[in-house]
Length: 88
Image 1 (cartoon, one colour):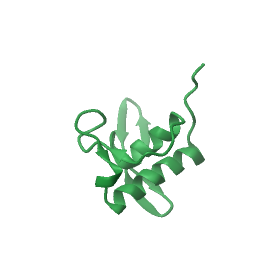
Image 2: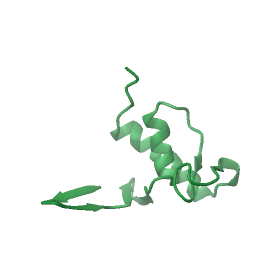
Image 3: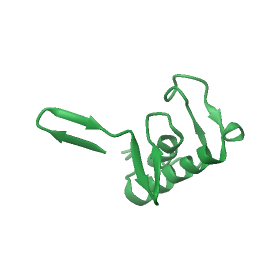
Image 4: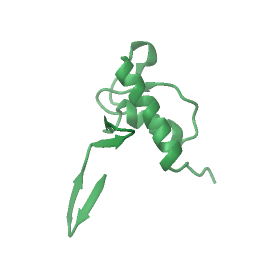
């Protein structure tokens, strides 16, 4: 959530969805799920522990159940509340 008051900007790095709190920092499982949805890509669980493209990609076979859940919740969240990239 981004809140702007005057010239101050506060960025919350978490999101509440379906009764759970998820980390949504760039590269997190939730973020990558939401990004795949945004770009209309098929679900392909993965994440980047040090930020997107800043380190080795963690594939689904190496993800914990909690990380997999966060990825799928990010994808679902964007499908429900987000938007899609326009390729026009």
